[in-house]
Image (cartoon, rainbow, N blue to C red; front, side):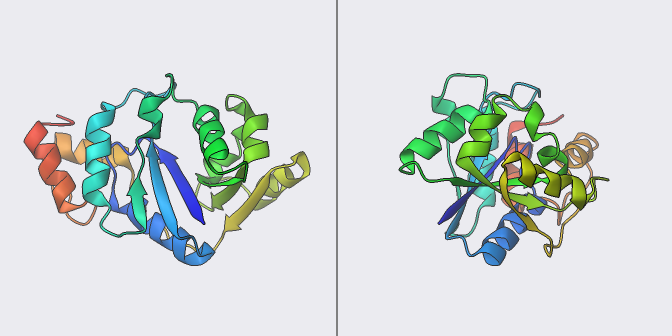
Length: 191
């Protein structure tokens, strides 16, 4: 059984990788498939090919893979479009989908949330976001299927923080994979 990890991954960092590894171990998934947004509707981001290439460099385990599916769908990259395709390819079985507390609490503000409710099992990551577990649990009453990952340790780093360090030419050792940093430097990204 697979689980999908959607995001911009701008750039992918060790927090993303460690989280994916922990989710796999805690929920016994065969694979975690990273799904970088091709053209996110609410964010300006680095072009898809750079983010996709960095993910390929960062994912060093057989059970961690990256998909370019969103590059083949009509932009903008709304999650429901990708979920519809994955659901069809999965024979109409629910898709496992990693999401943080902060994003999940706002799931009903996403485009076509009923499609997500019908076709996803959410793996909800408890993060230090100020969102209370009782508020997350209230979404069960609205028909959302989810499991809360309570015991995962978080490597607290953000892509935004890393972009700032790169812009200032600061050390990113221990934050992003060395091959990713070499790629960033080679192409002059985030300057």
